[in-house]
Image (cartoon, rainbow, N blue to C red):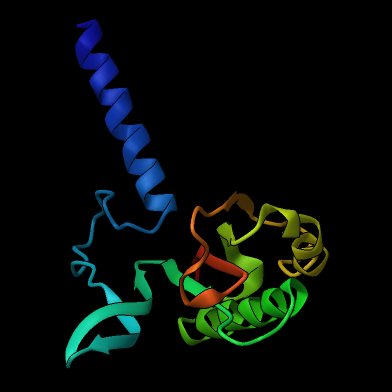
Length: 153
């Protein structure tokens, strides 16, 4: 009996979390259409789709890593990357204030403080959680920083 109750509680908890995340997995009186992944800004390689700039499922938006591929310092690269994230989020119907998670990849961990100076305040008064790491071998395309994020619409 205890196992049955535990499974029932876990099922309700999962359904609640899935509903909050907009996955459409909760039982409801009316049937809903299955969710489909939307893609934006597909990059092709030799005429074959390679990756999307962002994808959206339900009310979640996943933005691919954005870098800065020009000469400049970490502050210029960070500014550019944040503008790219903002643009991609807007195309998907979201905004910087709706970002839940950001991953930051630095070519050099010594750039952490300067990157933070530009990053600070860009996501509103309720900033997202963030992971920052230094990459071994650098960031692709000679960018000093790359960022990706997860947001909601």
